[in-house]
Length: 345
Image 1: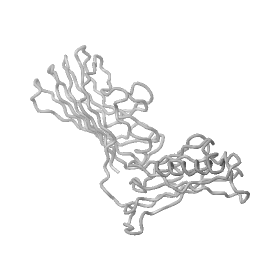
Image 2: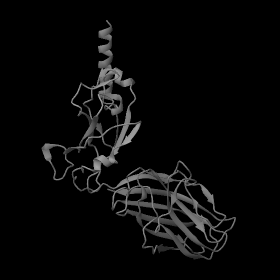
Image 3: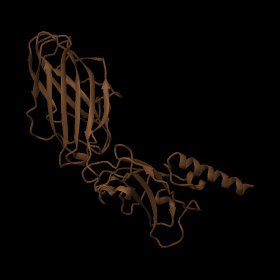
Image 4: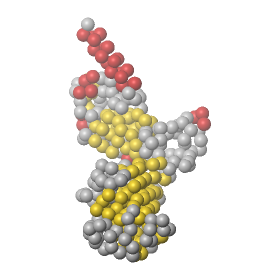
């Protein structure tokens, strides 16, 4: 009876695992109790095109030449159902770390395949194109293997218009700006995140747009900028305003309520990438500088030719838009009505 019950439980888990998309590639119940490593990674070809809809399958490699591998005394049974790569080229899968497997000196490798019809040249009926990472020792609670994937490197995919929205914002919150400092116009938890490693590819473009209204109670130059922040809301952590995405207008000599403004900024990743990556940033700011909101807007292009300060492109960054006045006044404020962030693949 106990044997039959155990067999039924194993089969029930296998069925649930299959229906759920097999995020955890193990069927043995003893192995489920063992600590596992959350393995993540990003798969893009040499041109930065993500392997959308592709698959990742962990494969166990025993290079010791000794006894069959075990976990907590039970045989190691790797799964056979891959996980799916998402629209950003990212995946997550759990595996038993090599430090929990006997004998020692074992490894994992990862079989990665593109979605059918996306490889270059078009493979047609041949289906997706596959490659395998080198041998990797998996340890700890989490591990990112993007570097191991890029070392292969992945085969090229077909070129396509894969511009994708990373998020948008709509708001009506008025932000008081009574001093002459920049103030973020999007509150914490509402700004738009750029996932880790999305910008960590040379020549990758991020397009940022925002528009809103300002109210000034004294003649002033108007300033708008895009900020990249490691903490949502840009109130702490590392905050970088990329050179070229901070633009100042000429003087607004009139006191205006709900004067319109907009900012469009393009960040292009330079050849310097990674935890100290940089951008070439270019922006255009338009603002109503007349005595009435019906007046035509004036537009101002940045004149910066230097790259940005260092930005950690390997971690999640948040996009915020800030505004400031050159003259402090208790009646100054601004509202960001809408914003969006897009990435060119």
